[in-house]
Each structure stands twice: as C-alpha cells, then as structure tokens.
Length: 357
Image (cartoon, rainbow, N blue to C red; front, side, top):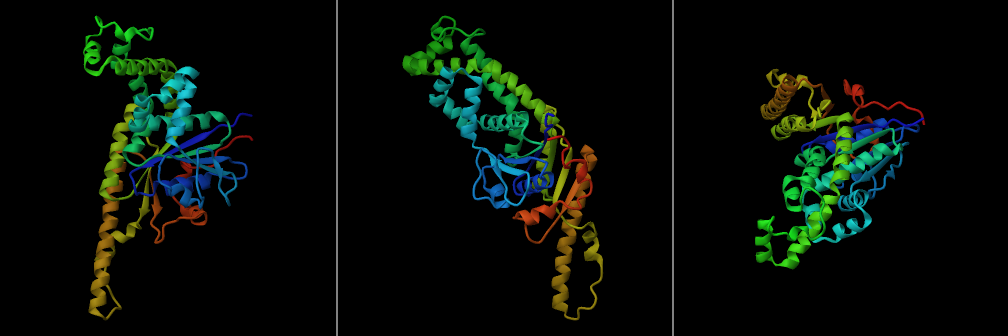
C-alpha cells in the first residue's frame, strides 16, 4: 500500500532550541518500521551536531544509533537549480542559470531560497519514501519566509510589473523593443544601452516561461503546508514570545494555523512562590542572602513564564506544551531520546505515524 506521509514543520525564533526539538521529535517518530527524515533549512550546523553527524547534505543520511531515522540539510543554491530545471524547458533553464540577474535574485531574494526549501519538502512528501518528515525552519523571519515563499515567488515571476514589461501573451524575443508601446524601455535603452537592455529582456522573457508551472506548483506546496502539523517553539523571554505572536498574525495570510506552541526550557510552576518562603536551617547570613537572591530571580522567571503562557493561550486558544529546563543542553542522541518524554499532550501532535510498509 502507498505510504502516507505525516509532515511536521517546527519553527520559532532563534536561540529557543528549535533545532533540538526538531531532532528530538524526529527520534521520537522514527523506528525500525517508521522511516523518518528530519530536514533542516537552518544554515547553521546545529542539526548535524545534535545528531552527532560529521556533515549533512541534500541527500538524506542515516543517523547512527536510531533505527529508521535519516537527516538532511538544504543547499539552497543546488535546490534552486533543481527547481529551475523542473519548471523550465532545458534551453531556458540553462540560460536562466547562466544569467547574472537571475543569480542575483536567487542569492538575495529570501523567498527564492525559501521556495527551494518548500519544494524539496514537497518532493519528499510526494516520493512515498517516508512515514514522517520533520522540517526545521530557519529562525524568526526566515521561518515566516518558509511559509510565505510559494505565493511570494509566484508573485515575483508572474507579477503585474513583469506582465507589463513582457506583455500579456508570451511574445517573440524582440517584443520589448516595440518602444512606441513601451516608453519606459525606450528611456532605459537610451540610458543603459541596447546590449544591456537586451540582456534584461531575455531574462524577463525566460522568467515568464516558468510562471504557469511554478504557480501551479506553489499551490500544491501551500496545500502541503496547510496539511502539515506546525509547531512554534519559544521560551518565556520577551523577544521569542513576540515572535510567536508575529507567527500567528502573519501565517493567517497563507491559511496556516499552528497546532500548538512548545515552551522550551520551562521552569517548574511551583518555583514562582519559592522566594516568598522563609529560609530555615542556614545560620550564615551571607549564604542566606545569596540563596534568597537566587530564589527571587528564579521565582521571577517562573512568574514571567506563567504570564507568557497564559497570554498566548488566552489570545490564540492553542495548546501549550512544556519541555522542562535541563541544566545541560541535550546535544547527543542519548539525551535527545528522553528530552520529550513525559511532555503532557505531546502525543496528540507528535506521535508515530501509522501505515503499511
């Protein structure tokens, strides 16, 4: 039977443990009969380090010590080249990839790189190879780009300006030199020179040929994103909490609703009242003062955490899952294996997929 793939997209601000949670979730999902791949779109080496791998590439690599788990990273430039070849005729693809204007867009337009990542994710989903796919997005704005890229890329290639410059119908390659209908280009020809303008014209026309196929693919990618389980990771610090609010506001544009918020490095709730309790059994006043200061600090952190949790839950009505704070960050498979154990409510979102192999 066809394998049904369950997709998990894990996003959030930088520094909140997003990659660690992604790795731990993938380990939880994997098994001898559960083929799982965790894919990072974050350019840092955090996923490779967490899984004790020397390096990662676009091709999934088996993770030693975890049956059924593979890991990969996204080479944005290589992935974008694959997108161009898939959605252009061979001759057009070669011209685009050799065109320095196109290279500038691919290198500098964030949505272009994010689109390559979403396309890779979608190809993995459609391959039938995997029971579960865990996607570790770039942090903060990069995570939003991951969701917004399909529509933004389609808008870039099929936007009104591009249609205005190249005409509603795909014309011959010399169409742009009908200056009576294109006064702006006539000025550009005078200022920039005909050779440069012809180079730009070729680029724009080649880009237009991708539009229909790319627009259709963008819709498919959006459907994959909407069907995925999206989890937003945060800590109780103000900046990451603000990023959570931003995610909820902006993801409505693409009809993606996070399934839950994961509060990482959560302190025990009872710590909120520790500073109010009397300290007994310590005769040394200086030691008592130091202990009192620490209890006050940690109590304040616990209260801030409670306020943040209540604010998110009250505003958006989503489940809040708490991953306990641990003194030493989990950076190996052994510690990642138990990181998510005992997280109340987690099985409703991150559970081993079912299906025949």
